[in-house]
Amino acid sequence: MSAVLDFGCAGVGDPACDLGIAFTRLGRRGREVFRRAVDLDDDTWRRARGWSAWKAAITLADPASAPVRRQESHRALAAVLQDSAANR
Image (cartoon, rainbow, N blue to C red):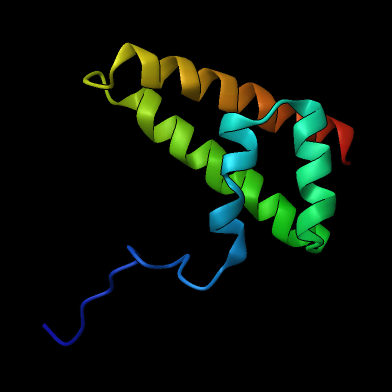
């Protein structure tokens, strides 16, 4: 073996990773206020949607995920889609 690739920390240093809370805990209006408050560029916000969708998909793909986590993931995916449609 000459190398090991580990993408586990691929998001380290990317502020988009920290913005996922906007899609898991905030409603549409709350996301709008939060987005203005963090004042980051559109690409960072798009990556935040991507991180949130990824986390939700991983949770939903795991049959052992708790029902409450599955519900949160469905809401997060709906928020990601809603935000994506509103911010094209």
